[in-house]
Length: 137
Image (cartoon, rainbow, N blue to C red; front, side):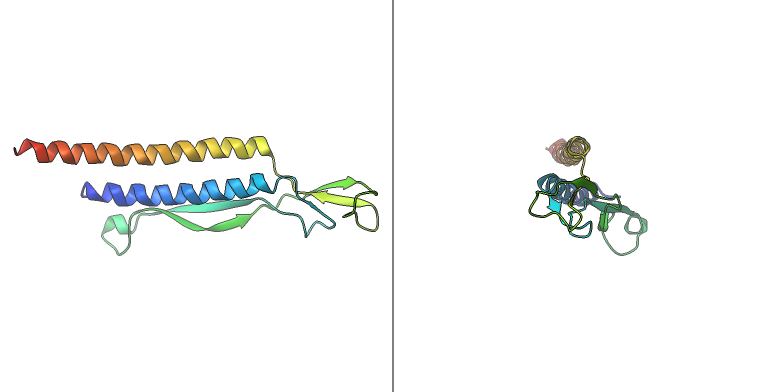
């Protein structure tokens, strides 16, 4: 494996963590959403990652991290009795998204640190390449 593959692998990791950060931001922005039925309420979204090892073994493609898709949470929304609320259903209930802001913030910190780790891997590789090139002079 070439040192230049580290840039490709780290690049896929950066892209994957960027998707993760965007979904977390969307989840936090919609944490207080209210709906008149469970189907109308925003449900948290989470990216699904996989490794692209086939490419590392000589097959086509780039080795690294792949975003396979984004899945919605299956957790049920919180049902709250609020007959005076404008979005209350005929029984007086509203439904709130079941997003835990503290959990999302912890996920954001984790994604941010993973992003930073990938940047550090790229910087270290760059330094190694530069030192290797300076050996010949």
